Image 1 (spheres, helix red, strand yellow):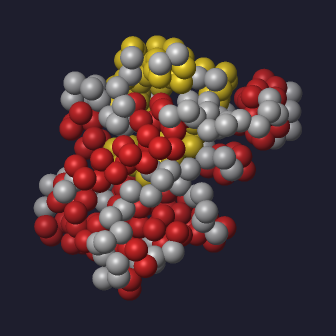
Image 2 (cartoon, rainbow, N blue to C red):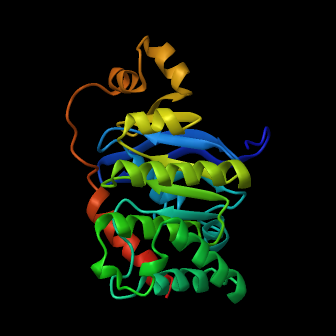
Image 3 (tube, helix red, strand yellow):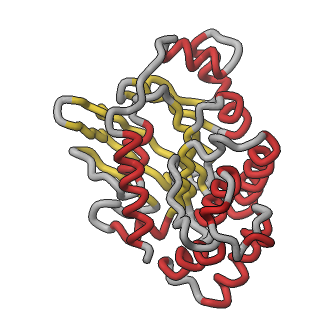
Length: 271
């Protein structure tokens, strides 16, 4: 369900530097309302830094961002209400139950009690955690925690769902179940999906359009067929390697530790 006119995410000439290192180098792109958009790149390419700027966790050095018509710097709260996010690193409160984590998120977004009770049960049943709703998250497996994070990100019915490697560590059955549900809500409700992944077959199967970032610059964008045609290759994975090379990369200089700290800050702000 893609709008022919409205760009729900607009990025223009975005730049972010960390001392002498340019993590994001003058990138521009748009995502239409209702689109499923994949943002791909090797480790260290600038993906996580870009997502942090889009989701109000990091301020750009220059450039413009609009999220559902809101500037995430000038109108941070309005922008945050427009999206849900599943972080690459865990951001749940392990000392709370699954139900308490969901309730905390609902209260932060000022969801009416009757609505949040109904929606929490619906989502916990979807991720097959309703029977474990009163269990402490610290006793959950990694896959269970990821499923709970996805349910939490969907709770306030956001216009946009950001997913930063959401299926990392999940078994194929859970990955398939998760993507089927996300495609369903995208189709029925027109929710825009913006995701990163290192599973090329996942991006090829799920995304309507793809942007590939490398060394802080967007090196190509388009549908899977367009990227294959551009690189004269037979698959998205081959196209990706053609555009970004075969060299093994280190992770973003600021990525893991900074994202972990920022996701913890995000959790504390909801309390």
